[in-house]
Image (cartoon, rainbow, N blue to C red; front, side):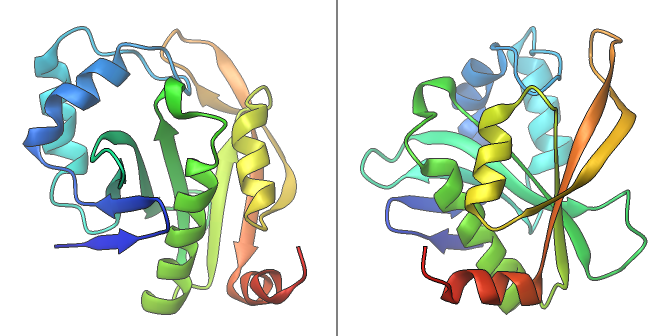
Length: 179
């Protein structure tokens, strides 16, 4: 099984057993996607997008065994480079502000650069999503600029993306600097 352990978290493959936890979290608006109206919608998403994917993990708190979010390395559709990926993530509202996502992103960066041999990881955040941008900055990502009118949300509104990236070399420098 595809697992990554951190001090407080286990990143593991998502399964259909996660349906209830995923559905409960998907009923809250988040990151611009439409909340799921039924468990069947959540089941379809799990089966078609998440389950069986090597680089998508559920974020589980080790102390409770509870699934609290997800994180993944996906194809970066804004870069034409085979060793580039984009990190995306979501975290349950009641777990925000506790450092879990920073811990998960750091673990995924280590996996990406050390095990997968990737060269650059990007991330995109909406300008109003201060928490997500802060996670990226804490993990050593650098702001590259704002891509205007880059994303259409589920309600049809058009929004900018703040673009961030970190190269393998920047990551190595970042992990060895005094923070």
